[in-house]
Amino acid sequence: MMNNWLTLYLKNLFFITADIAPYFLFGLLIAGFIKILLPKEKLSKHLGARNFGSIFKAAALGVPLPLCSCSVIPVAILLARHGAGLPAVVAFLVATPQTSIDALFITFGLFGVSFALVYALAALAAGIIAGTISFFLLKEPAVSLEKGFKNACCPSEKTTKTPLAVLRFAFIELMLDLNRPLLLGLLLAALLVTLLPPGFLGQKIPPGPIQYLFMLVAGIPLYMCSTGSLPLAYSFYLQGFSPGSLLVFLMSGPATNTTSLVIIRKLFGGKTFLVYALSLVGISLLAGILLDFSLTKFTFRPPQTEKEELSWFKVIAAVFLIGLMVFHFIKDRSPS
Image 1: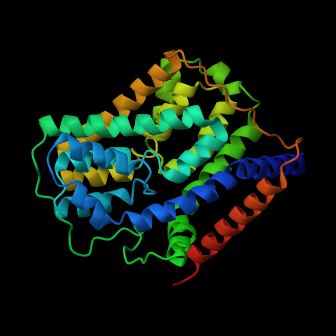
Image 2 (image 1 turned 90 degrees about the horizontal axis):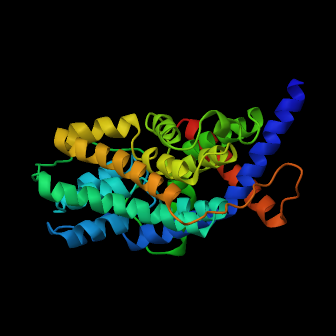
C-alpha cells in the first residue's frame, strides 16, 4: 500500500514538473536578458521624480523582474538611496514580488494566455495604486542601507553583457534563489494531488468569500516566491478553486510572507508598512472578485495525468530542471 502511494506521488510530481519545466526554463533565460539590460543603477535613474510617471515606471518595471520578496527589499533600499521617490519605491515593492517573467511563462503554460495577462495586469495595477496612495499619504523617509546589510538572495550587480553572463545569472544565480521555493511548491502540489481526489476541497470550501479568505490565510505566512506558488496554485485549481481565488493566492502569497513584512516595517516605518500590506491584501481580493464576476470565462486546459504520455520535449525539460534543482540543492548544502 505504501509503495503504491509513493509510486503515485512520484508520478504526479514528475508530471507536474514536466508541465512547468519548459516554460520555467525559458522564463529563466528571458530573466537573464532582463537582468543584464536593466541593472539597478539604470532603474534608479527612471524613478527619481516624485510624480505619477515614476510610479507607473516602477510598477511596470517591477512586474517582469525576477526578484522574490526577499531580494526585492535590498533593491528597493538601493533605489531609495539612489534618489528614487517613496511612491515609486512602494510601487516597486508591491508589484515586483507578485510575479516575474519566469512566473508569467509558467502561468501561460498552466492556465493559458488570458489568465497570464490578467495576472500581470493585476500586479501592475496593485503597484500603481499602492504608489498613488503613498504619493498622497506618505512623506519621504530617510532610508539608508545599513553597513554590512546583505541579502543572500540578492545577486551581485557585477555583470557583463555577454551570453555567458546571461546564462550564469539565469541558471546559477537566479536558480539558486528559486530552487528551494520551487521545490517546496512542487512537493506540496504533488502531495495535494495525490492525497485528495479532484474537486474535493472545492466542494468543502464553496466559491466566494470563504475561498478568498482561505487563499489569504494559506499564502501570507508562507515564504513562497511567485514561481514556487504556481505549482501549489495549480493543485488548488485541480481541487476546484475559482480563478479569482487563485489570483488572490498568487498576488498576496509571494509578496506578504512574514519575513518581508517585518523587514519593511523596520526599514520604511509603520505607515509605509500599512500602505504596503493593506494595498496587497485589498487589491488582491478586489482583483479576485472582479475576475470571478467578470464576463470572461477562463477555460483552463485539463491537466495531464500519469496515464497520459508526455511529449519528449517536456520529458527532456523536466529531466534538465530536476538535474538543475539537484545540483543547486547539493551546492547549497556543501560547505563553501
